[in-house]
Length: 341
Image (tube, rainbow, N blue to C red; front, side, top):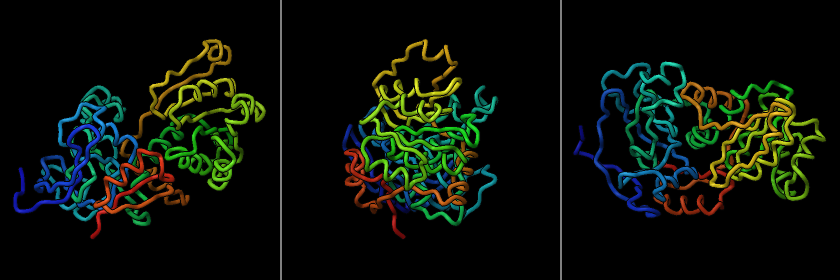
């Protein structure tokens, strides 16, 4: 059902690489949905899958999957959420609850999961409708801007670390101190790991130390595997940068039964020698993001431990500029759109 009495400002992709401003008619939430007044939305590199047409897209489409706002209207059958409540919407738009993956408790792998800003309009807008099963609760002591990047970059790294099996005191290395990695270092420190940051150049090392890393390895100056083994080997490597060779190089730096978790998307293949795996029972796995309950925990943990992204803000009216800056790797490290009053 459409409320034709009002419209709202949105930024939509209309063809590969082209964003334009538009005014869209207000939508009433369908059963199981809520309507949200958006206050902030992160500009994530994954938005390029929508804007550049990497995913199959029905044009036009509003990108954005790090959305923070307040519930303004509840659709029929929605329980557990209330008008005025602050909520977040991430990349996963809400599980179906009835497929085999959902019934097994693997909500992230729901077979009927849709992606925010891909299958339906996302957060580069003043308003949106969202499935209630995908909502996350935003703590009062996090601002809208602070919370936005935690719904994707934060949730992805926090969930991977939390579910990795690593224990307090274990050596955990983070490859890439960028949009994901600078949060991963903070989470790893807060979880009680011995944190190793891996990047390129001394300036990155200075930042990593400020973020909480106990050690820094400059991959441009020394072998990552050798440096990790001098520390006794890593129990876990979290690969947040998108480079297959970097992941391959990290394997020999793992302890026996150590694990590398891949978060960064890349077309570059990860080449592994089988002997580097089975002689020491090492493993490599991937992680996508986290379910809504883990999102709630990510936000609470961030609030409790003072973990935050480094953010550059842009008003919605400068969304095209903000997207361009993100795509050219210029922000340090996250870009967030704000919607005004």
